[in-house]
Length: 223
Image (cartoon, rainbow, N blue to C red; front, side, top):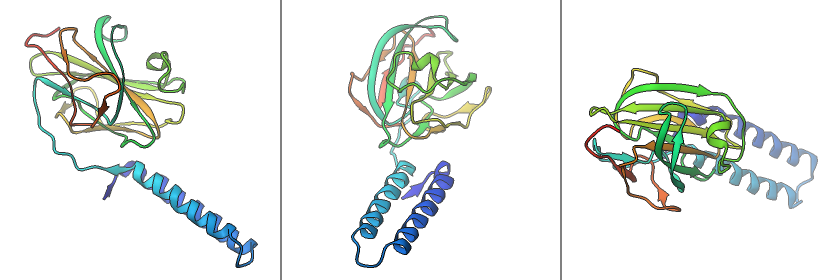
């Protein structure tokens, strides 16, 4: 199993802390007590959970200029028409995906194109499912313009536990669908804003596989 570079420091610190805790327990308590064994088992479980969070899955992907793929693993929690006020200043179809701490937290580009707009917003750390998290929480806003001139906006949104957003793109970059664009640590949410005429391919509560699940299909003209 390959591990993501964003986890190297956290995994090393976690391992050191757990080792020190276990050495301290063994030093303070005589042999034969059940507490050292319980602490050791608990430490192994904690380290395993941290390691699995940073796993890099192998995915079989296909690329399409018409299809929008999920930018993350998770569960679809919102499908609705909204007014997007930061970039489009008008109505769009929003799909939101909640990422639990057990999901892979890599973020992928949902479609190929040019990064037309990028902005990082500092903010709060409301729970990811809070209605105001899309506009009040720490977040990034990314707009990709396809070869046909259609613009897709998506946001990485920090949650109550996710306080580290990473991104690997900037304005003017040419990006490919299903390639890595960033990472969010420990539970979060991603919002995608699509043209109103996009054909939605998922339902509420559907589980998504990042870089694989098709969220929507675009029409032939820019919106």
